[in-house]
Amino acid sequence: SQQGEEDPQALSIQEGENATMNCSYKTSINNLQWYRQNSGRGLVHLILIRSNEREKHSGRLRVTLDTSKKSSSLLITASRAADTASYFCATDERSGGSNYKLTFGKGTLLTVNP
Amino acid sequence: DTGVSQDPRHKITKRGQNVTFRCDPISEHNRLYWYRQTLGQGPEFLTYFQNEAQLEKSRLLSDRFSAERPKGSFSTLEIQRTEQGDSAMYLCASSLGFVVGRGTGELFFGEGSRLTVL
Image (cartoon, rainbow over all chains, first blue to last red; front, side, top):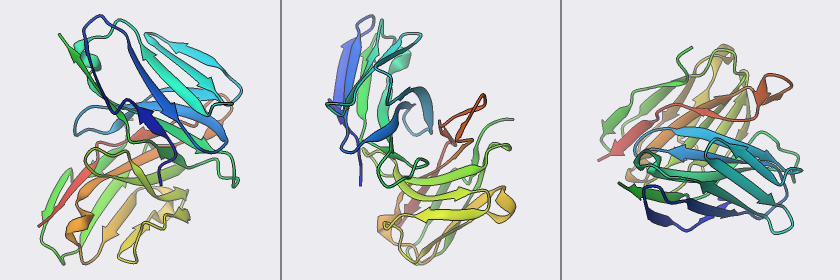
């Protein structure tokens, strides 16, 4: 089963614009992570935010987390054509005691047009 | 260290044949994961090892699937009597887990092994 659900499923923007992707999840979490995947390749970790954090920055990335709404957002500022990829949120579920399994959403396909 | 490596990258087989995938994790990582990903979907958890111990196996896995991690190093994922529904990308990842000053819980993925069952 998939814990997280990203929204939108697909997003197409022009280079230089900002891209915002959202993720909703169902159960309490220890942390939430965002990953990127280029077509046909493996996933690459982007950023991790812990359940007691509300916002985190890394370069052009900004992640927010609202545990009361069980949702997170990933903002990519000043997008580039090279940002074209699928983006996945992944949650590390708190309930049940397991803190080692990440459950991924279905992803958002971002296309940045030059 | 060059990261997580998987072999083969691509495998085409006929229905009913057995296939085996190998994963070499980052050497200091004690955690190893297998995920399966089909087109347009996110990775689905299959199984997890801590060192050589297989600690969890998804209910998605039928008895035709088996995974091993002898001596806590490389891992193999074998699929017996393959079916067309097994066609997918099989992803391996490794992790240190949460270790103060060293591990942050992020997964390091290989490039995947794509299986096509005809």
